[in-house]
Amino acid sequence: MIELTSEFNRPPRILLVDDNPANIELLKLQLRSSGYDLETAQDGLQALDKVRSWKPDLVLLDLMMPKMSGYEVCQFMKSDREFCFIPIIIVTALRELDDKLKAIEFGADDFLIKPFNKLELATRIRSLLRMKLLYDDLDTSENILFSLAQAIETKDPYTRGHSERVARYSRHMAKAIGLSEKEQNAIWRGGLIHDIGKIGVDEAILHKQGPLTPEEIAHVRLHPQKGYDICCPLRSLQSSLCVIRSHHERFDGGGHPDGLEGETIPLPARIASIVDTFDAMTTNRPYRKAMHFEEATKILAAEKDWGQWDPKLVTEFVQLVHADFTPAS
Ligand SMILES: [Fe+2]
Image 1: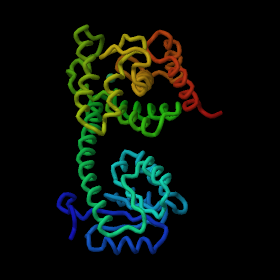
Image 2: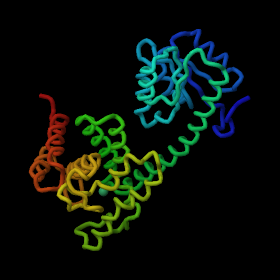
Image 3: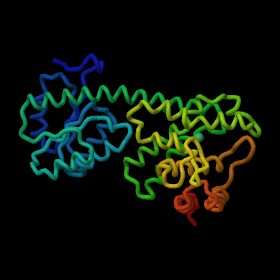
Image 4: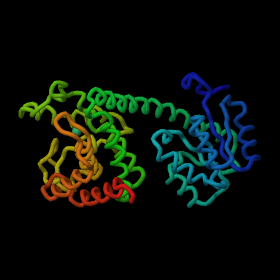
């Protein structure tokens, strides 16, 4: 019997990863009657290749393998936006609690100790495949928002690619100051859609050449709140919401929409705010040419004590930009 076929519109794909061919054969035997589409890998590197090329719906993963361990495979998959929703069941002979805890810490969704019985295996797989279907729906909603954010930008040649650059460099900065992979990922996603609220801003105002009236400024300033309202229902975006809502807050408390001050502004938003401004300065705008990175960092450094940004972060950012952008002599 093929399970869950109608929901997936094809047999669910399961990747079996184990360096011992006898274990792979045993798993195949136990899953033979389920109708799943099975693929195998004999080490961690091969497993990641198959994850990328074959896109399984679930992975049964051994821990101790040559080249790359199951822990590393798990950690890699769970920190990648494309693969983090693929359920992973660790299948191992290890009985130590520490190993189990370590695998769960790295993001494993379930754990089976060898030898396990066929019914237990089938039940766990079925329940995680159901979860995968829900994630697929969630992921689709998230991707629609990312595409929408890109579509808004594409309309304006001056902002094309802006969010992608803000996302990438904010993640780079987050890594440089030692934030976890999970936090780096949240900042990256937030960066990609930080201006999605502009979908609710009048286009004539958004693309107006010349200074805005006070009413128009107030209207544009609604976009962080609008973006937050759009993304709020998506659970997968919860840790990125602070970037969307607070990227126009100022360290001295004079920003919007909440007038947050100092370190009450979430760290991801403080980072994105600096990168957002830097990107705007170093790209062409209708009213001026792009600045050289040295000029832009000089302005950031000079203004860091005036209150817009977290001064410590500006110092870190300027150093990072110089290290990245200065041509090697
Ligand atoms: Fe913005």
